[in-house]
Amino acid sequence: MTVKTKPPIAARLVFLLDKAKKRPAEFSLLGPQVVSSIAGLRDSVAMATKDTLWVSYEKDLTAALLKMVCGPPRSLGMAVFVHALSLQSVAGLASCFKRFAFASDHGFLPPDELAEALEAKNAADLFIGGSVDLSSETITLWRGCLTPLTVPFSAFEKSGDGTEPDFARFSVTDFGQTVRLGHYEAAADAILYEFDPDYRRRISRARQQSERSFGASLRRLRKQRGLRREDFEPEIAGKTIARIEQGIVQQVHKKTLAAIARRLRVTPEEIGSY
Amino acid sequence: MPINFPLPESLRKAGWKVKIREKETLEPPHITILHGTKAWRIKLRTGEFMDKQPDPDDVPEEITAFIPKQSNWRSFQEKWDEKYPMNPVQDKDADEAE
Image (tube, rainbow over the protein chains, first blue to last red):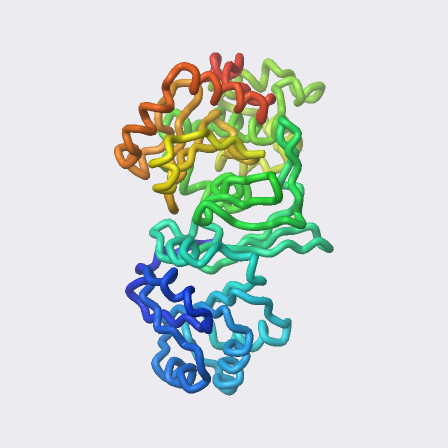
């Protein structure tokens, strides 16, 4: 997944579809124009460009918007729908928004944190919301750049102190830096590091040259998987793993590399990106 | 449960947090200082900031002074080891590799 840098959203036209009185103040960082009526919605559609950001808390106004713009495809910009959407609406909205995120109310950050995360320079590295699919055992997380990242339940392993994720109690917190599953908290950067190869490469580039060797990557990935060097036996001796990690072995045999990759559940080419 | 380290009230009210969460990028062991959309990681083996960005100088002195106090430091290390017994702060592998 490629994450492009973008100009700050605050410089864009922002429409907040909302009838609550207090919420606009919490979005003040984005300087939104508040839309609470059909008439206002009509004016907003006329003003919208491909860079406009829409944030809707009102299912009725979203439905009216969709009705208003149906017809030839056009770009109204990007949108965050802080309410549930029907499958039919999703298809319709896809024809007029280049990117949009949606989830039920409690699936997003609180309004003030949502505004700050959308405006942040590192918006692409923050999770503004998401939803849990119990049938496929996956969580779809929305990044601040409004692209989705879907991860399996298996990514959230029981902690050493016994804390287990409760997938029925999903939320995002810490301005998009933490995914909360009941008492269980997962760092957004750890999720991105594991599931977004582009993010991983970007982080790896920032590391010192010495830490970017194949051995260092192997060690980081082994630790991430919770494996000891001895866990590669009998196929590969623990001592061999140690020698590769320490850079004593520079050329790793193809068969050895394949066996290491198998144990780590990645392809041989992926190891170096960790 | 994530480990939330108690900070002075003024820092808490200003939105500062120091945490060890259940799922972290594991290597090396570290604590995370959170404020708004920014995070700073400090290595539990050496006490150094792990990343050059965001600027470590943006972390208030009260926090950087609080963290290395011996009792706090030991507590951070113990809590990490409880959460990540497979990657302890005092790691034989790390001594060989670092």
